[in-house]
Amino acid sequence: MSTTTLSQHVWAIDPSHSEIQFKVRHMVISTVTGSFGTFEAQLTSHGDDFEGAQVTFSADIDSIQTGQAPRDGHLKSADFFDAANHPKLTFVSTSFTKTGEDTYEVSGDLTIRGTTLPVTLSAEYGGSNVDPYGNHRAGFELSGKISRQAFGLVWSAVTEAGAIVVSDDVRLSINASMIRQ
Image 1: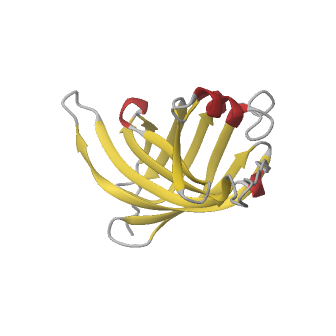
Image 2: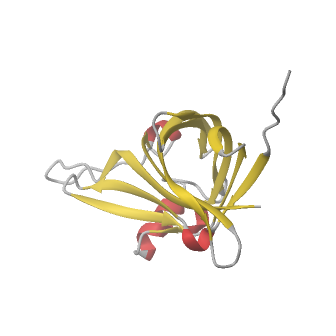
Image 3: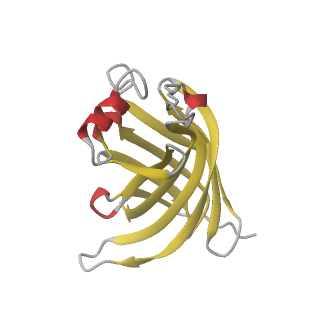
C-alpha cells in the first residue's frame, strides 16, 4: 500500500506585478475604473495543482485611486467605504474548484464595511515559471461582479434628467502574480 504526501506551497502576491481594479457605471453612459494601491494576498496550495487551494486577501481602503482626488475622498467617506471605521476589505476563500484545464471558480467570504457576504469569482490560471531571480511565480486573472449596496455602500443620487449617478453593480478585475515562498 502506497501513500502519497502532497507538498504544501505558500504563495504571496507580488504587489509590483499585480493589480486590483473595480469598474462602476457612472451616469449610465460611462465606466469609472478604480484600483487599490496597497493590498496583500496569500495562496496555499497542495501539490502542483491549485485545486482546493486556500486564499486570503486584504486591501487598504485608504489606498483607493480613481484618478480624481475628490472622488477618491468621497469613496473613502462614510457615504461609501467609511475608511475611518472600516480600513480594510477582506476576502477568505471557502473553495477553489477547477472548472477546466486552466480555469477555476473561487468562492469565499468578502467583507466590505463590516458586512460579510459570499461571492464567487472566475479565475484563469496564466501558468507558472521561474523568474530571472530564481523566484517561482504563478499568474492568475480573476473576475466577478458584486452589488455595492448589499455591502452597505448605499449612497445614491439621480440627475435632473433621471439618470442614476452610480450603478449598483461593481465589476472586479484582479491580475495577480504570486511568488512561492
